[in-house]
Length: 157
Image 1: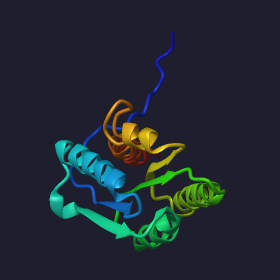
Image 2: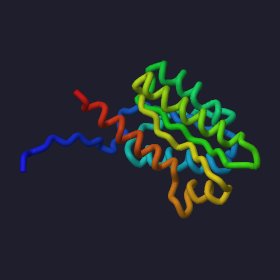
Image 3: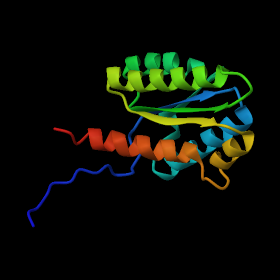
Image 4: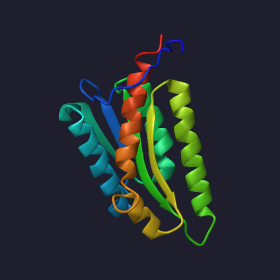
């Protein structure tokens, strides 16, 4: 079998500058996501001076803040954290869809990787499960995905 070159990202946050953009809406859930992401990055070598948390009102505001931060070129990557929980109206669908599209588009337009930790759940119980109980912590997963992506992109020639 021929030798195949494989590029992988090392899970090392040393010398990276990372921004976390976190929604205050549903903060009892989002704070657990932030805690998970921060803990993960610290355990993987980030210097606390190289990590900045931006608190914003809600998920709908994520794309504009992420875009502004990405355009500063101050950060190697950005982690988006929030929680949109379905209610009795279609508001959930609009917020979740537009936030997701805006975040993805910003990453594509700027070339700055974005870790996606926006929970979109049908129930409060599902959100709690994804913020550190049965289903793990999606803040940790967003930080891990971001870190690996940043390190892979550094190796693209």
